[in-house]
Length: 324
Ligand code: PBG
Image 1 (cartoon, rainbow, N blue to C red):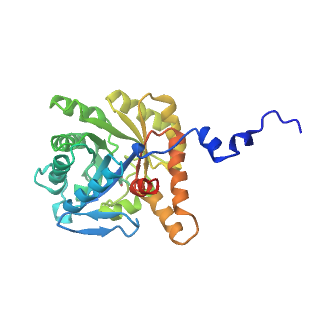
Image 2: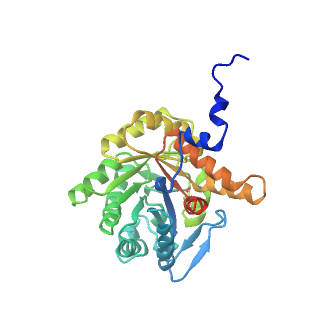
Image 3: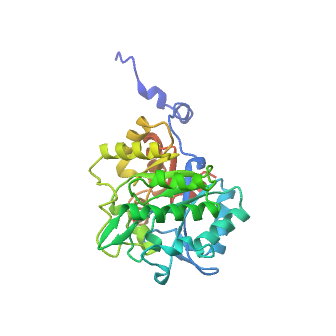
């Protein structure tokens, strides 16, 4: 046969395959989301996320220490609060002595080398379970911005390195950027949840934090899964408002959006490999229907290949352990 290009030549041994490999995942790329709850020496597994625990502050610090040893440097911390601390205006998010802000300070105190990312949205603190301020069953945009900016400032004061607005209100990146800068936090970064879709893949996360909306859904602020041009619009706005990273969320069903943003913007793109994506792999692996570890690695690689340079993933620790 006269076949000038035989692509199989570059696949003929492991060494050659490694030589020509275009993309790879390393622990440097990963951010590990962690769930924080009140108490001492307390942990509970999230039923729909096998292997993922909610931890009290003392155990969270231990977990961070063990992850740092594995080379994971960056942690996105989410608080689960009791219902009695929630109100319409997410007041608890500003409580310096409260669970979240005091734990952030402790992480920075004990592990100054750790990078802390925080979530800015009202849902864990809101009696309505929405990301914004609710009036007459409507999620108000501009009234929410002020609450978000105060929340972001409180987190920056507690030591956050990267602020992650996950609320999808219009104008929030610029509003938060200005509040940070006006208060001397010019070095605090913003990783904007830029293209955050109204997705069924967040189910297990809302179980973890008991943060599901009390009425309706999030479709008036999170994006329609059918749209990608709209992701470009959101990215344009966030970029111009001063975002340091643009995030796409969920990741696996939105690899095209990751590529679109990466092709059009010269700042790092992050992919959030969300709770439902983790749960599906774990459930099928537990049944013996797939090889969980190999599927995990293939999924993470697909996000890198699509153009994400950062991946937020519940697989971070097991990935780090798997390459040791
Ligand atoms: C809060 C927030 C959510 C997630 C991250 N931040 C849930 C939501 O918007 O309802 C989801 C993360 C996941 O599913 O892993 N605004």
